[in-house]
Image (cartoon, rainbow, N blue to C red; front, side):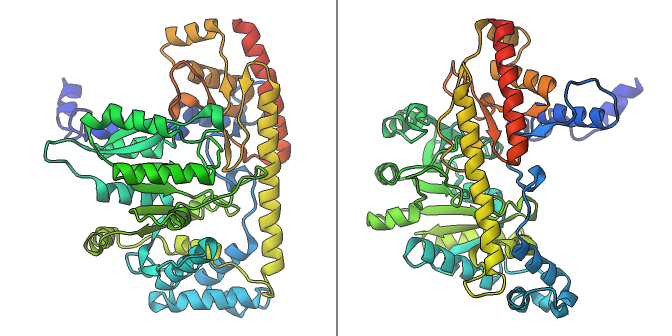
Length: 484
């Protein structure tokens, strides 16, 4: 009786909370990751007899957690901004000190503990505009840029802005790629928006097929009011890099269908494949003489920086009506401002040391070494997957992930379904329990029905990645043999 009385005293129950929260899923931090954490603790405490000594976390793009070293310049600037006594320390280069002093002069009370304007520190927004102008060869207005708590906050802010119910009570619809980064489906579910899912073309290195875009839009048009299309380039989880011609096709499609473009371009520094190149949607759109509403997202969490925990990002929002832009800025004011340390990390990305500066040589050396190592790991991953019978992978052309397809035996598929699991989840859980490798099943990102994939990062350092690939290859062959 007391238990029932205690239950009745709760205001929040599974029935009374926001039901949209129950619908949200975020695969990269799902049940497999929780189990990986349990195994790690068991290994540490000697409570398990697993045939491995450590868990290899290949489930999430957390660069520093997998051994990537932070950039000296970025951390020195952060250090000097947080501890101003270091500005008198002769061990710190003069350009680092000048950068810190300049940034602090734009902070209230010359302190990183003060609020900035809601859209961010003006100097950093100006530096972002300079970076974009140099990258694209066309002007960028600093007042079109807002600094955000990572690119994730920018995604949520843009989706919040465009979310409205039409006169016939249809939800706002957003075209999202399948496979996709789970942030999009999770946020759309939370906001009661409608995901219009279009399949990327796996047979064509995950490019966007315009016929498929039209199919997806026509299939869902009656269920929603289409507002925008999300493009992730370079791709997560696919590791793809869109060609310039494909980007032009997408822009023409968006123009024809009156869709805003949300360009998730956080991996713009991560391009590895020979002949591939990053082309910003803003630049291509300008070359085509087309004006569409565009939100371009960037982050200091990826690239060669990997500062995931500092939460730095920006959104350049162009071709908005002035009155809409004013409301967007008003909406952002409710969150006061993004982390000042995150903003500073973003500044170090968009305004790095220049040739001749004391920090330049070391900065370039560290940046180049990181990107070259990622390129080698991208090749190792794809080559390994393509050497395993029953597995195939497109080139890892960019970003930080591989998304190989796996051919699972019918017996394994049957056993998975009997246990109420997706077959690729069943495979991934077996892989974790047998080898300690934590990956994410393709069903967490979306895939063509009847196909099975998994996403792995390429972030473990080269020796660790080689060890991981060897373990995975042995496991896969044994798994197929067991269930053939």
